[in-house]
Length: 343
Image (tube, rainbow, N blue to C red; front, side, top):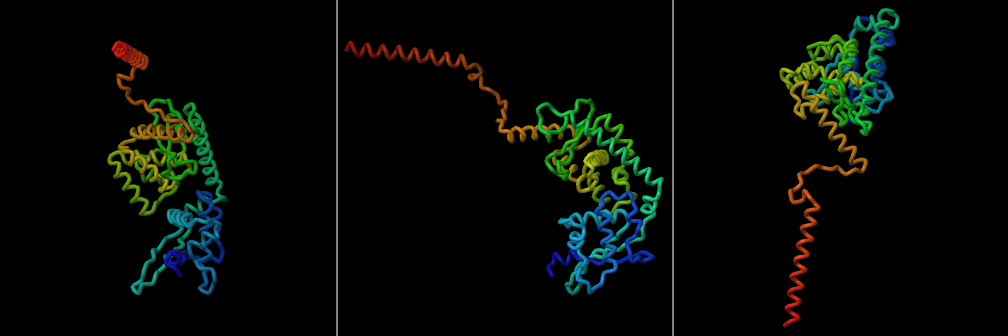
């Protein structure tokens, strides 16, 4: 077996008090999962908890991907990270043993948290709260869609929307595929949007708290905490405010993932953003580059306004001077020819 296949393999063990021979209904009934793939991955892990060494189906990331009908192993890895954040799974890292053999990761299935049990489809209170959150998110997206219609006249569909409101902060969003770090980052935060937006998620001066609130979780992994703290430190005293601004952009794009948020922050950092107000300058630069790109794609020549020399400032004077010089030259030539004929 190749090295990559070894590293993709894993074992599943359970720390649950009661072991079931079927999938836990609490997982299927829970209404707070952001991605359906996470439930499916958990179900597959639950199955491998009863894995028989003699089975022809070997536990691996690739196997889960095939069983979940996805071609990307990274999709499965991201899903497992979310299950860890939800306190459903704990990862025991593997590695090489002293004899050089590779020891696979072990995925421990933990006791179902009370938050999962509470947010059940059978709990009318939890269901109503979920409906309220969905309505607020829908209203937020509707407002954002209306703002995006205010585009610059003659601009392309991918150009950042026009925002004439004073004090607006135009940030960057993902491309049409909503991938982090892509070239189509834009944003549009105005007063009317933020008023509705803050009804969806409460404001917080702390980046970590805001991140947890936006994802609807109570805990984050150690790695996520370290990454967030590093980004906050990168932007110094304005780190929390800038990180929160990036989270807001991710929420509008419906991509509340740390990887996506880091893509936004990386673009801002490369541009030289030091505080929230600098994001406007980034957006203006983005708009200019996008317009130039669109002009090139449409076959238009980009006209640059370079300084014109004084001797070219008046083309008519230039032509007139050339005509006078030609006339004098002709007269001199005629005089020379007359002298030649007399001789």
